[in-house]
Image 1 (cartoon, rainbow, N blue to C red):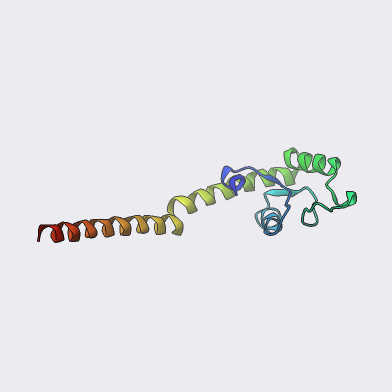
Image 2: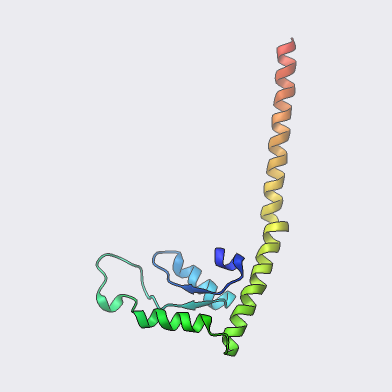
Length: 123
């Protein structure tokens, strides 16, 4: 998801398991990606017809980098919008709040332990 946060469109080349879901999300939902054309999981016994060819990679790069088309411009603009949303989620989202609360709780626990230990040692 680094590409999402960076605000750049991506060429997707999934190889295993959840990467195919990530590809669908980036290409179909976010609208910020271009598929290289992989159809299945990578393995050592892949047939040559199942491998990605150079022309598929070339087409994906051209599709991604060509901003002269309406689709290309929309993809870059959408990548910038999604990056702003991701930044807001990190800065002020629930994850940020949860980590902040966890840190405060740990500090309170440490302080409580110190107070209890200090009282115990003085007795």
